[in-house]
Length: 392
Image (tube, rainbow, N blue to C red; front, side, top):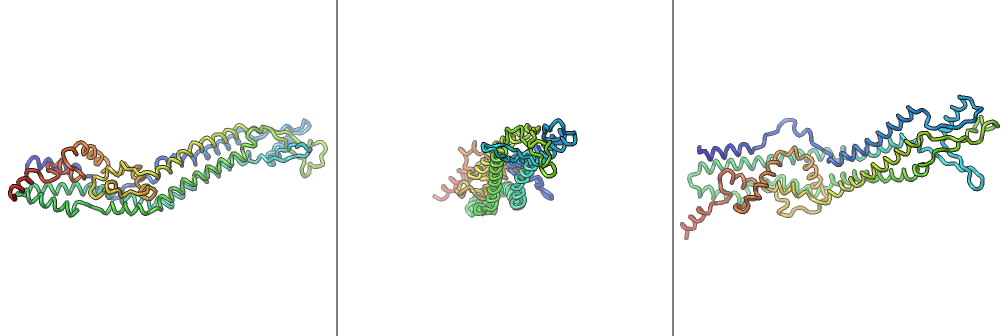
């Protein structure tokens, strides 16, 4: 074996990817990075505010402080605080002298509304996990495996070509067989390409992804309506007039008709309302950006894998409308790029290919690795000239 042949064998052996068997690809990311951020913020932030609201209520005691008459005992004053907090209704005289009732129940329902908001924001996550994640996981496992296997098949094919060229005494025979194999598409492995082409006609994943983000926008809009309709009306109200003359106290003459109470937890209510509005306002552009990514192809990823035989979705203009399952899979392939071992190798080969295309016609990794192994990617000119001289 010559030194050049041995060097080519070592170079090709090092280019082969390791065979990953057994439990593999356990760390597949079935959520895009931005989707995960939206999930943690949209679900976690209301839970954080809920815990702060409960902590404030337990630490400071009663969230209201009523100004009971001076002749009331401590137990009677505590009863007034408890009764006014239970009713939480503001009595206000109108122009005709009648009392108008205004409910302040959002103060009491604040922690529970935050819990309901967190549960609502988690529903789209559950939808994705149970409706789309299992199918997406199987698709990614197959595609990642086939991409790496296609790369390895290309390298092994070059190894076989080098061995045949080294054993062949007549270079004409080798190049004739090589051109015949290329003409009959022996070097192509179209299973993966056809599978991805079929995914362009499937819309289950993209429909679930659109529904997930649409639900997030819907629940965010409902949050805006809730804050605007119920919180804005009582946002600056520090005091309210409470009536305790009910039931047994309705005929008591020494009990005033209305008792003024102050909302000691108003600052917490205002902070929670403003922070909720601000956080979800920030999330809306992120959600919209997630939706707009479905309107364009990740052509950089496709262009790199076009170096594999029979993977020419771009060059053959097979890409149509990007709103389909294939585009969703490409987004998740990008998110799981660390699982694609062949990606780094093909990225390097693409860079090197751009520097050699002026001298050689290189389309696939087979052509490039053939050149690196010391073989011409096509029949040398002196052999072609020799054949033309022999057959004038």
